[in-house]
Length: 549
Image 1 (cartoon, rainbow, N blue to C red):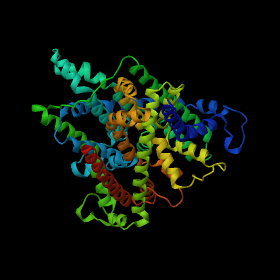
Image 2: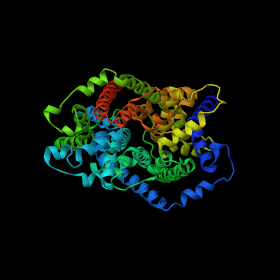
Image 3: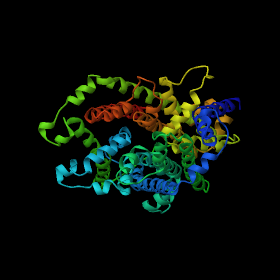
Image 4: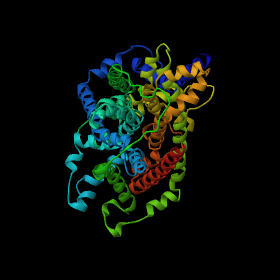
């Protein structure tokens, strides 16, 4: 019991420090509009002013439409591919997994710019094939299309891993009793994989409604505005409206909270336990005559999600001038030479990003496992509120979380000065990305029967031994995926990096952003290429190490 209490205390303290503190600062700012001036009068006056704006209903409707559409799009792509990956022997499965992680290496605003340069009038597609698809890109379906291709790996890996853990053995038992393969998958495998699928869709929805780069990049020509662009406007346009931005952030929190309640309703209706005793090897079925159609499907998704944006980024990085177009006499390696020559601190920025991403992955993995244990294996009072708190960073735009961190940590009473140091970036990444390990580990706990806990206690094992010797090995597949996602996303995080990075300290995203601001698109794209391939190489090494374990 002492060990369980200590774990609960550590988990709660970590959540309150990383998430509760900045969220509390934002809530206080929303309630007291004059907080930054030390004025606590007229509480809630900013709420009525923000909610009474004529465009508020349109912002909320657009945000909901975007979140639901992107979630459905990811499900339509990822559910079939993840199901096949989890149950069947897909040729080159490990290679496809690595390729499907590459969209996370590409910052959303870079991907949006790549698609603009490809599909716009006189873009790369028009130069190669004479096709102008700008009318599609600069529309609501176009925005959904680009965001789905950025976020589908979330649902793909969740479906693949949960189906792999849940599916084969019990589905085979159903087939022994006369069920057809399709019926066994529909009635056994998919229901048991529901926790992971629902958790990933919740994350996709939350990331869609808080994504800034793609809507801001594409919406300028479509007039499609969402809550997050409204928040950015309040931060960027003078006079700065901190109370209004905080109120809009609370609306995002309510939308994410509604999605969370839907998740609870779905998961509360049945049991999803599929691991209750000694684990057995998963036997995957051969694809047979479906091999080539499946490979074509994987290849098509890879072409759209990876091939086109990466090719566009490479084309821009290798051309001397954008106006020169795709011509051999316009090819140049001068932008890569500038990056490898550490021009403007390019290689330093790359090292900073990789170090911070690795630290964030390790910290969030440990904290996420502890928090998931508390939420799923203890009777701690108020643990549902902790669950909601753990989800909030996905519902609040990164720029708002960054402001909350600034308000919270830029205070004289802290014994250690963290603000305006690189540690502030590490805290920001952990605060923003902690929901991934918590969601994935929580879904894994849903599938691990409590009989294993009881057996360990009967054998005399304490809470520490239970976690280390029994639960952690069963959690590692899901938790490892979450940590890889944290690493991938942290290497390309932009908004919080711009807000809280100390002077003179740059990351990949801030470097690329600065190059575009200065009109050096080629150098920015060259840096993106180097960062993408460096991060991918690291992920390949991690994948190989995982297979050897």
